[in-house]
Structures are given as structure tokens and as C-alpha cells.
Length: 356
Image 1: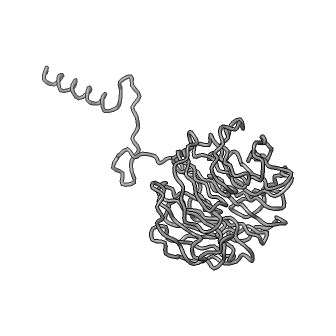
Image 2: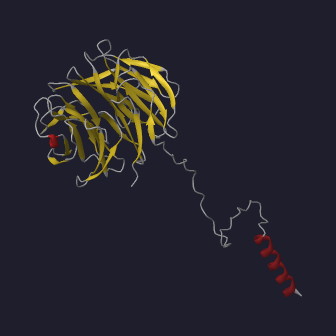
Image 3: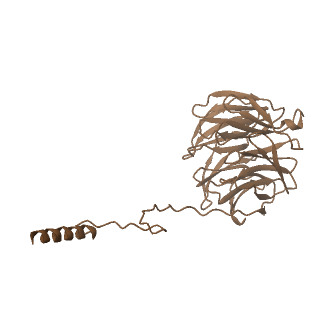
């Protein structure tokens, strides 16, 4: 009898634990597809992939000299000699809004890393300023004043705290992107500073100039690190590779009219040595160079009205994009590397599918 009661007691105790009969709430375990009762993690939501428009964007009434993708790839900005900045929806090619404020040519545009602010520089005898704009509603935030001639290039630091600008006054200025205060000036070039670019870690600033040189600067204190020499004419564009190890530069034969194949160069960003020259463009100027986000491809646009894609590792030519009817003044890859945009003196912006 006692043995029977003991067995009954053990059985009831086992049933209580099996049914979760204590005070704590049992956590259910969701069966996997095989019905094995294995707890499976839930994947976090992912952003919807962008399907880019491919074709021509029209609306500007003069040369389009600068283009830039927003960090999320959904908006495109273009600056033009018509004095306006256009914002475009990259999924369908429609114009979102026009930003008006510069009294003359809008020579350069750049998005902040968070995509909330757009910087623009002016090439006008009445306007030597940089303007900051709210991307979401197009309102003018503030104007940065300090240069004494045209502002030809602007670039945000990777952390978005600093803005660099290059000017026809032969200087580079660094600005606090939050309040617009001028932090310092870099002096050393003897000609117009056509292009500025931050290294991916934000520690180095590269500048290309009319004086045929590229300078590397310490972005924190403004000290000059080194000068890269080799171009026989103006240096119109500079761009760092995503890993910061390589610098690409595009130039012009003017005013010395050297070798036409000497206008697109790659450099070791650490020691300044020349790696190779990319040969193929048939015009005298390379207006713009850009690395793809994965660092495997370089795009270049020039006076031969084409965009050329290059293998960044060995310099071989991949393919040529044709369609513009005048100089290609600016090129930029989308953040995911699937699309490329270009601005041209033919007054249009184009979007290209550059997937393999």
C-alpha cells in the first residue's frame, strides 16, 4: 500500500513539472519547419533593395558639372551652370525638387554621411560661398563665407563633422559642418584647387590643383604630408579607394600638352609612389574619377564624351559607356555599386546599370 502511494506521488510530481504547473510562465518554443521543436532566431528586417532607374534625366538648362548619390542611394543631386541644384528620385528618375539660392554656376555638390544635408559650392563672380541645404525639405540652412574666389570642390569628412572646400583662391578650407565656422585653411598650392577628398578614415585630405600636383594633408592639424608629382597638366579630380590604400587622379593636358594617355593615374596613398597610368580615353581631359564601393572598379569621365570603367587592381579597361553628346563632367557610383550616374555639358544627367 505504501509503495503504491509513493509511486502515485512521484507520478503526480512528474506531471506537474511537465505541464509547467509552477508559478513561472513557460516560454514556448516554436517548431522549426521539420517539426523538431528547435528554437530558431528571427532575422532582423532588411531594407528593400533599390531598383534604379536607367536612362536620361532632363530638366537642367545648362551644363551639369557635378552629381552625387545620397548615402542610402535613393536620391541623386546634380549641380549645374544654370545656377540650380536638382534632387532626383533614383528609382524612377523623377525630379523631387529644385534648390535655388546661388546667383551663378553651382560647381560642386556633396551629401553629408547621414544624408540629411547637402553642400554646394559656387563658381560665380557674385558668389564665393558654400551653401548647406536640408535635403528633406530643400530649405537653406546656412551660408559659409571665407573664400575669396570660386568654390570648385566640396567634400564631407566620413564622420560628417567637417566639410572641406577647394577654391580658385588656391586654398583649402575646413569648416565645422554643424555651425559653419571656418576651422583652418591649408595653404601651399600655387593654382586653383579643383578637387578635395577625405581618406576613408578621415585622417588625410587629398587635393588636386591647377599647379599639376596632388597634395596630401593631415586633416586634423593641416600639416602638409607630401606632394605627388607626375601630371603634365591640371589635376581636376582625386578620389580615395574604399580601403584608403590607393588614390586615383584625373587631369588635363593643358597648359603643357603632354601625352594624352598620361591624364588618369593611380597612386599609393601611403608613400605617394605612382602605381600605374590608365590608358584609353581619347580626349585631353579627365574631369572626374570615382571608385566603386567595393574598390574593384574605377569610373572616369572626360572630354571624349565617354565614361570608362577600369579594373582597379590591374588597370585593365572593362567597358565604355557611351551616350552623352558632350564632355562628361562628373561621375559617381551608387552606395551599393549597382548604378553609376554622370553629369554632362550636354545638360543631362544619366543613370547607368553597371552590374556585371
